[in-house]
Image (cartoon, rainbow, N blue to C red):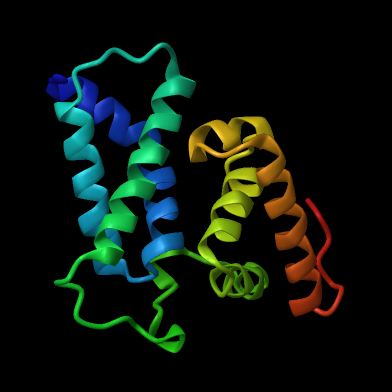
Amino acid sequence: MKTEEEARRAIALYADIVRRVCFMHLKKYEDVEDAFQEVFLKYVLHEEIFESHAHEKAWLIRVAINVCRDMLKSPFRRRVSSFEDIDFEPFYVQQEEGELLRCILQMPQKYRDVLYLFYYEGYSAVEIAGIMRRKENTVYTWLARAKKMLKEKLGGDFIEP
């Protein structure tokens, strides 16, 4: 079990990342906050020592993805919000990023995950393969397909960062 100091340090370092990963899956602020709490509860109860900060970050991302998937499968989830009901305000989306984010959120989950981890978190395809427990070539294929989908949705205006 982690100490309070370790938990505070992890939250300070990784809160934004965990929230963004959860938002990419759940799209609803209240659900994101529930998932956030569950992820860090699992962190506090996790007894193994992490090899490095990168390992700790990857572990938290993996746990966040799993928690979100469990929430989406939950029988208690009464309804799914329509895309128009999504409140982007708490996440401080700038106007020019809003259209890109909307396009990404409309994609299948596997494409959302790889795009987010690749562009927003700066992971390589090899690292993403480890986090998502998929083959490297699968991640490369998903990235290529996701980029193609973005170009089609944005009318060719998508420029890679």
